[in-house]
Image (tube, rainbow over all chains, first blue to last red; front, top):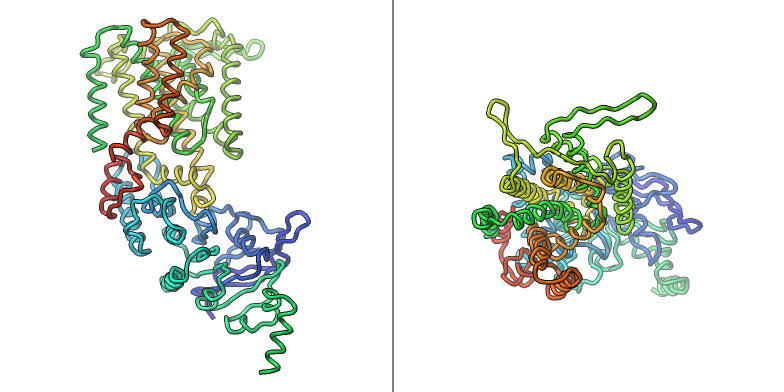
Length: 266
Length: 348
């Protein structure tokens, strides 16, 4: 079995009296594409926020490559190579696509302040390397034609790509994608699925939250289903598709009866 | 292209004393230059991190007082017979200390207030400036209070064995201010084009995303505050050694407002912005004085500001740059990555 990259151990998040996540327990192995799904308000984004340090869990622990992330700030977690994208605010709108990716490269080639100000050879070399790397990433993601345009002026789907490119620039070992294809049309989604696979093939483990079921079913190795803050099912896409608890969560009690009846008739 | 323009401006500034001999105008240029340095430092915070420091003059004033006191010496009773006595040191040491201590104050204010940002940062900086002003006004044993610190020696530059030069004349001070301004400009330019500057811009535009790609908010903002305060301190020190008399009025709120006007009208977030805005609003009063009564001067000042911001809301430099197609973020302009790399290098 592959080594575990991320493990969520009995995590609970309470906002005052509201229980956003009651007891969450799952793991993601190296090289996997895992999807976290569930109806609205199930606690998916909350889970993301806990994993990336934007929220502190009330109970439980998040472990990344064996190390407990407790008390780590978001930027420190990013420094460990656990990078996320966002649902809405996925780019730096007033900068060009190219500069966006450069900002994502922040984690690489940090040079000393004095070196940077004096423009010493090491600082120049590092700057040059970063620019080359940014150009390469912009090309890889397929946005060369838009490299000099403001990220804010791009279409929704393109902004998503910029978001992914700048997350990749941060050299993640693991990438968390928060609803990456929402608002994309079918062909954009199709291209994006291919992109996610390519990213995985570069050795990046992926966890995604998504509403688009066909997309989730086609891309995931494993699916974790959340409802009312707890995990109701976990397994490969085929299992999840036929899981009565999942059908109930998505379609309601009545649907379960219908599905059962249909199964009986069949 | 941009670099050529910058060098051309520097050459023009350097040539000014050759054709301008009027000591009154030269004096106005020197004080304006000092304020432009202050405005450049403010721009680092306001334009590149988006934090408005409305107490920026505090760092300027602290620089002025530190430098003046270092070169004048003092004898302050602390408790009973216990005195702190300081024998005068050379003014150049005061200049360095002004930068260090102002920078330190920038660190403290930054650390304290960047955890509460936006409007809170504005309030903390205003309060800080007011507290410092009151200390300068009331700690009479140290600062002479409203009686002012007088006879501040002029800056002396030189190396042991090579002889020294006392910068007393207006001409010498003009070039001194120009040199410090040029160094500050280069320093800020290098900083904002490094990955530190990108971190600042990232935080200003989308903090959550910036944090998610590993940018440390507190560290980045504190760094900007320290450098900004240090440069403001240097400007204050130049001011003290040029004017040679300072009183608590150097902490006047209106001076901060002047610097904000210089930055905003010239274009915040643009390196040349504070210089352009500074030249206009630093020299405007000088040219208005002979042609109209004082009330009308202030009204004209206000009208000019409003007109500039009405016609060019983003400030003079960014608006002109966009018109001339020099802007890095043209929006409509499409080019290959190779071009973007080249412009990026020109910027650096």
